[in-house]
Amino acid sequence: MGSLQQSLVGAWKRAELAYAALALFALTQGPVYRLWSESGEYQQFIALPAIGQAYFATFVLVQMPGCLLWFRSVTERKVREPRMWMLMGLLAWLGASVVWSTFARHSVSEFIALATTTGFGLYLATRFAMRDLWRIVAAAMALGLAMSLLAIQRDWQLAVDAQDDYWIGIYYNRNSLAPVAAMALLAFIGMVFTTMRRRTNDVAVLAAGVALAGVAVLVLWRAQSRTSPLALGVASGALVLWLLIRLITQHISVASRWHNVAAPIAMTISAVVVFMALRTVAGLASVSGETATFNSRGGLWAQNWAGFLVKPWQGWGWMAARRTLDFDRVGVWWAAIDTEWSHNGYHDLLLGGGVLAGVLFFGVVVFGVRSLDQLADVRVATPRFLVIGFVLAAATQESFFIGSHFLWAMLVAVLFAGSATRADESVESVAN
Image (cartoon, rainbow, N blue to C red; front, side, top):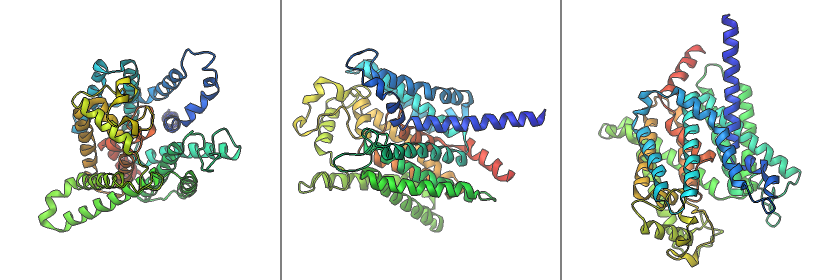
């Protein structure tokens, strides 16, 4: 009976790992868009239901099992953590913004998507040890890269840009393909660091990780996207700064009191440096948008900021501003490109929920990052820090703080991977 029970538990664990990888793969969005691409071609003939409804329903259904499993496993102690209070406050406020939203029927679906993906991120954080989490991420990204290479090799529609010959794969946009490759690299680092902690190194896993990293580098190069490589650079710089601050606080008694907040300090300094760099680049009229360090979005960001100043306290409603007709004439609208996206996750928060949304998100990040300083083994914390830094940096250029997107799920997962996960790893370490 005991052997049968162990077999069932093992089978369930493998099935859950497979589910988590496939769901995260779906959240890279390209697979779901490809799934419904043929149906979308009939939109002009059969208007309802809209193709957006199919996307929304697919993403919700894919994530729902994970959300339910997280809800079953949540404990009062986890809910009482400061980072969880901040996250719940952020979701509550953005949910309430539907009431005063300037485009409520869009805000409500966007909020449901955000809440669902937040729940899926918490599921990843609490149900899996870090060793398993990095394997899940690696498997999900590997699927995305493999399908993209297949699409490129077979010359699927829009898999390669016809004019500039850069790779797009199954993602319809190189700025959607590149984050998948970048996250594959970070997952490889996570796999290496967690495998190093085990007494018996898994050579096969490391070999697969090396192959994945090689493909990821190739895809990053051929995608020709500037945002993801430079966001990786920002994350790496922030990591070096964090390790330096930890070293100083460990060896200099005067600075020892700052040891438990070294990660928030490093992130804050990095954020200030990135902000000043963006301001400098945006202010150089001689710098082309194609050659600037980050893709220039000066006119668009100016319009976003002007829109925030119109409704600074309550916001326009979650993801409603740039879909509102009145917003089209805010600020220097003639200098902004015609798009429904703000191309900046921080602007999305400020436009959607005003100052309070920004403050609550800042609290989530600070308390989540601070938990990394409580880890005794820096090897466990390093890949998590890199993922946080990458997502926060990349969000300065794209709307990545949204529901149904794998980067939001990953940010939540690494910010909330807590004591339960570390306890699991301790047991596993002893067992090995």
